[in-house]
Length: 104
Image (cartoon, rainbow, N blue to C red; front, side):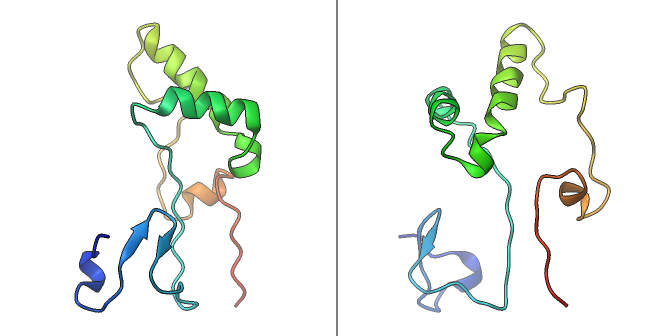
């Protein structure tokens, strides 16, 4: 178990990427969009495409597969024709990547 710097000494421990040893706070919300670019990515893409088990039916994985194929063909950039730079924290939501609406 890894103690994270923001809670060192508080008894809060990071158990894995989805759990800590205490319940999540209802006062703090952190959204994180991520993909795991590891040696296991090819297997993960194959599983995602076959199972549709990840977020929104694994809808991002065909794009990741296309990106990696393009990189294999000689374009080693993570940028694509539709890539956009986010100018504000609301950029991912504006791009349709998150669907979070907090009540006021």
